[in-house]
Image 1 (spheres, helix red, strand yellow):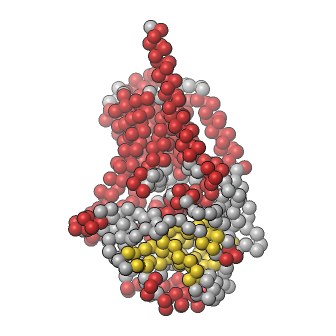
Image 2 (tube, helix red, strand yellow):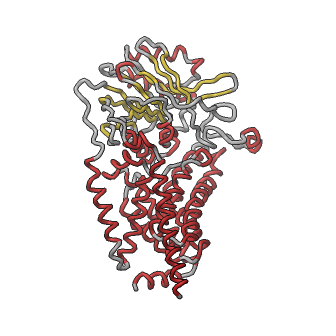
Image 3 (cartoon, rainbow, N blue to C red):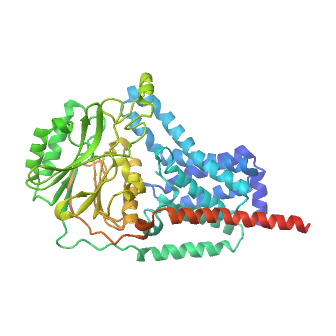
Length: 505
């Protein structure tokens, strides 16, 4: 049979050749992520990874294939992770290759564990795809989590994004993996795999009819997104700070005043407690429009990455402190000890890092409704959105993506913002320092944007929210339970058949 012949051929290549091929396929699979968005390559590449896994010997061989594929995948998908270390080459440049290597291998360990368990259970495509998807869920939770560049994120640019309103990101990852495995079986003559492809094609065809977002009405509030495009290396340089502040002021006071103005993360060049004159000037430039500002503040020895809202009279009406901080970026675990070796958070401005805020909150924005504020990294986590004490009318994300460079990081961050909107059925206002600033509707579609690397402002109507989606009401638990069932049941049936065959002998 072609299937058996293919397994024998792969097995004959030896473990190191198999691992090398898996690493290459993993790297190819990463090209489905933004900005490349070659998602069919991702499906085909995972089909190859599954084929090598299915020919591996024992759980150790399966784990090695998972480790190799994951290292190749994350090495390409997260290549932007070196960018923050290159901003100050003299102090942090030496860390860049280690950051990428440790990240790629560290995240690949999740895949190694999943494939090792799948190999131990003896399950086929369902077990393999379900366990890998569960490993991605685990990657998004452990050690504060990092659910960036999940395989399913390659579908954000496709109509399949609509299914996030039903099950979130995890079903998208499972769809990519099971499609790859089905293609492998089809290529080897297993016609039953065609049924899987037909089902997936049906989901793809039905996606445009899900979660349709209405266009903004004629009376929709107009929101101005301010994008100063400040390079990170200049952001806190006194020689440039005044010019950058003046640029934001120019964009704020241009044209007809909108209903809301939004500046990006850490846009105010002073600590909040020392920024009184700056805030008065900003409020004057806004000419009666409320304004959202990213600012840093301190309480004694503690520093916070914050968002404030000023009303039309310049009074502060809301304060939000970022609570989900970036490890080794905004704070350093065991910072007092590691600071002795010169290791400090990249984004901190004083001390050994930021302090986390109390948690998610919903703030009232007058006629615009209620907003759930998110600062940069928090937009990556569906649980940070789900943690809101009440359902908002829109998501409000401010960020400084200058840390992520100009190649892939900012586009991947934007894609995940679209995913958050689709999951919840909520529009999003996204103001980014260097871009991409965007207005996103409740189905995750971008309705207006300022391109990456450009300075400017954009006035766009705020789209209306949808009713709470199924995912907004249930979260990840139904999907996690279904994945666990799909992982264990086929493996249990496989073992039962093997026992019966053994008894028959």
